[in-house]
Length: 395
Image 1 (cartoon, rainbow, N blue to C red):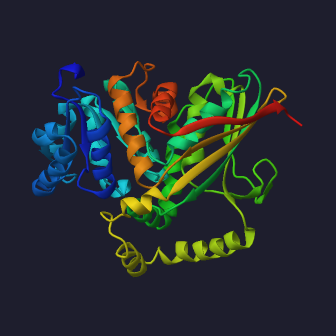
Image 2: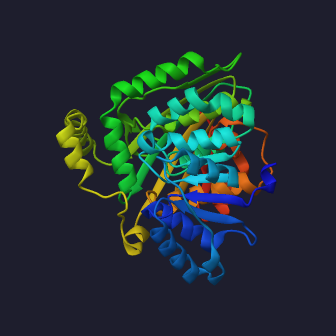
Image 3: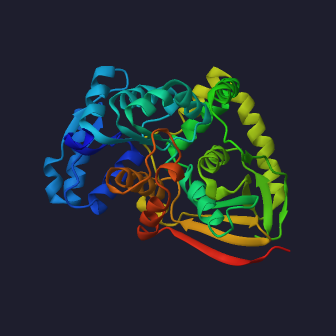
């Protein structure tokens, strides 16, 4: 039984910047009696992390340290078999993630990460979903800014509408602050692997069941001005729409016909168009190995902004939902998206899987499918806001 294992939670990657913030969050906010450990490949760096945590809570001076490396399957098996839940911040996941997914799926251990890489998520479904279903493991990807605010925000929005009618939801993202170094590395990796990403999506589509008797879609929107939020809306090709669509496919509350679109909300359209041209050029350049190596070397994945810089960062995601003759405007908001809030979301997701009364699920599942309102309540208690800004008859 998993309850007999030594640890409720193991955090893998605690020596990295975001992993360190996640460990610090747990040190400050984990419930009394949590049995947890930190894992990584460098014992000296793990010991330094423990010293930092002990300064927050002296009881953590004896926090267990587990040495494990993604190139050593036996070490990952030992980690997976020692814990009920394993959370990892070690990316880019397409290069470093699969061995731990495989170990957790085989051991029946719940797995979480903060990936925003569609190729990785699709391949993990194709390769390990069935094994995780067999063992009872829950594999929950995208438990950071990608994609919890969008997944839970869309869920919060549809709950304001009737569930027996067609529903449409549009999400509009705004953020102030820096992307994390890990996100930067993952994005460059994804830009260089567009063909592989397309193949992985096709592989998944060929084997993933579709919802019966319902239609669920995530469709690209068009550039235009949104009267509901008073800003330009620019389609945002992130993993978030895929996650929302999969939640909708798994939950009847999204109605018999659900459609989601995902946008960045911007003040000035010309700025975005110029950035789009630059992005198109970057996508082309990053396919060239010398350019890609140079760009990857510009920012170390262990680097991040100071606490003062992070305190000035913020995000909002507004959702416009319509269904059954009604329209609702909702908002999810929080602080620094790339680091502090991502660490909070991952930590609270791990605690939610470990301790909360949740629906019986297994295999690769989304945050909403696995945790739903239990996670939403945790995040509200931790300082994120979910609120209805307006509600009334649809025009």
